[in-house]
Amino acid sequence: MSALLEVRGLVRSFGGVRALDGVGFEVEEGEIRAVIGPNGAGKTTLLDVITGLTRPEQGSVRFQGRSILGLPPHRLPALGLMRTFQAARLVPSLTVLENVALGAHHQVRSRFLSAGLRLPRARREEAALRERAERVLAFLGLAHLGRRRAGDLPAGLQRLVEVGRALAGGPRLLLLDEPAAGLDESETRALAETLVAVRESGCTITVIEHNVGLVMAVSDRVLVLDAGAVIADGPPERVRREPAVLEAYLGGAG
Ligand SMILES: Nc1ncnc2c1ncn2[C@@H]1O[C@H](COP(=O)(O)OP(=O)(O)OP(=O)(O)O)[C@@H](O)[C@H]1O
Ligand SMILES: [Mg+2]
Image (cartoon, rainbow, N blue to C red; front, side, top):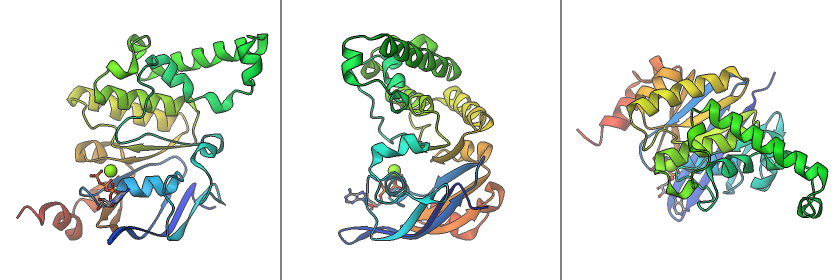
């Protein structure tokens, strides 16, 4: 059986910089897959290519056996692929609940017209979206924030709300870009528990993360990037001992 996500030979340059220089990896159904690496290693560019925000010069991306390269980003949620951003991209003027509900919008069939006229089906769908968003917020332990204006929350919490928005879409694969940045220790522990619970609910996770403690605690396999290339890939306890990884993290400091 093929992997849920298969990435092969990605190359993407920005001017003279090879942000991705032949990156390949796989995500198996049901795993928590971490992606780590020093600043500028190409982690975010990798997610951008997978989610159609950036075109690679070479390589392939297959999700559930089908090529998704070249698909516009807005088509991906309906296929079961949702992501979050390193700097959260919520609608600041909407409430937290409304932002989370936005994540499920691709599942709603009502046209604007019927929504505008408040026809019964549109009203039912709106209520279902709201209920779903409330459930997701409760799952994340953020129910108390539902009525707050998203733009008023600190950056760390905005990132968590964005995780909620992605979950509301019922993804098969959730891609997270540094969800623990800006969280304190207890919030990070809660996030770790959330990720494990998400996985138990049947959703596969790929998470870019700088917090090595979090990575070691929750991930099944770790992909290590440095300067656009894969320098290690395997279970966390093995990867953390690889000389190339130690060199990438400590080399510059020594
Ligand atoms: N839009 C862009 N234009 C020019 N250069 C870019 C662009 N996006 C990324 N780069 C460059 O590509 C390289 C990889 O960047 P990327 O953001 O993918 O790294 P990262 O691993 O996510 O780093 P960080 O840990 O700091 O988030 C860097 O050298 C960066 O400056
Ligand atoms: Mg990044």
